[in-house]
Length: 190
Image 1 (cartoon, rainbow, N blue to C red):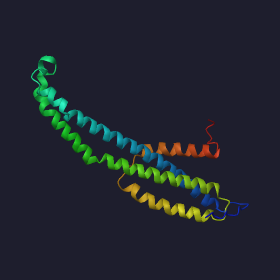
Image 2: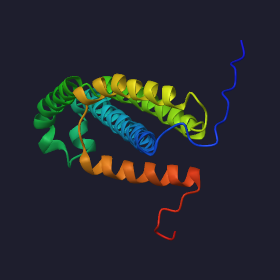
Image 3: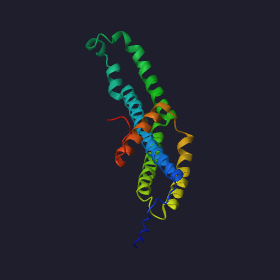
Image 4: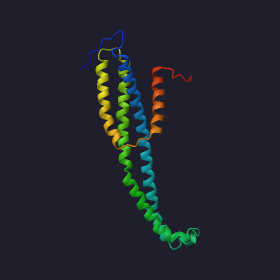
């Protein structure tokens, strides 16, 4: 079923205030998409680190090396530390596993990935409405986007960290990207 194209108006269907709302929403959505993408990456890296370190610490190869009576002859540098290593490595492994479990890096990475996608889709929809602001249904589309923003922002603010410096960097990058898309000079002369 093909949709009927909306008639194009000679003036924008959105007032200046509504255009500013759309602009702010577009930048906010692009900012949050980038922010959650970076957080997902960080959580994933932390999970990989804790799992990798725990595997190294608790691996059977490590135990075989430490229990081998010839280990102290083959590696005299570690011989004085063998009793401590036999005790310390499993404890360290358990601590790393507990940290990975307690911090729920995998779950948080997945949640951030979902939020990245939702905010990214909202930013794309904002871009489409920006391009369609001379159509009669632009206001309806803007209102739907504002409702969608409320739906997405609820879960994204509950359990996620608020790293203001990272958010500011993401906002600057998102603003520059959108200005580039629109061919707007940001005033820096670059």
